[in-house]
Length: 207
Image 1: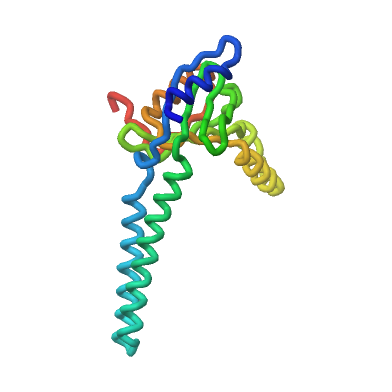
Image 2: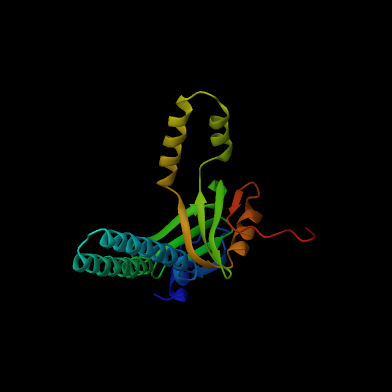
């Protein structure tokens, strides 16, 4: 289904006095950090080649070393291709909506997934690039975490781990959305006490 078809289907599920404020579609190619991954792969490959030729200089078999380099290169290329393919397939045809009450994620594989804005405790703006980013929504209370963290009781570490593990089962993400800061501003306009994390914070004017 295209965006308008999904939106029309969602309109039939709106609650009383609920209206759609934002609609968006996933575009993970805009936010996936392929350049950083390629750099790390290239660095790893160069280090490996250096190590193999160092071994050759100290008596290693040249044919085996060349074969190892070729195999390693093929494995890295396949990894990059498969990662990109799986990532795009995973988020293919995902649509996102924000209303005055809820935020919604839709895919053909899982259908509609609804959460209420009033339940959001934390929003992370991550992998931001060229006005696209991923938005991670968490429902763990920062106050509850800080309360546990401030206590010196070692047993609270286990409580924090359990709390985060339970929360991860219900967290939701918007992947590759356009104008993420606007989306966050709309959500925080409805619930103002949400903790915001931005991995690329903008410098305030005048500083």
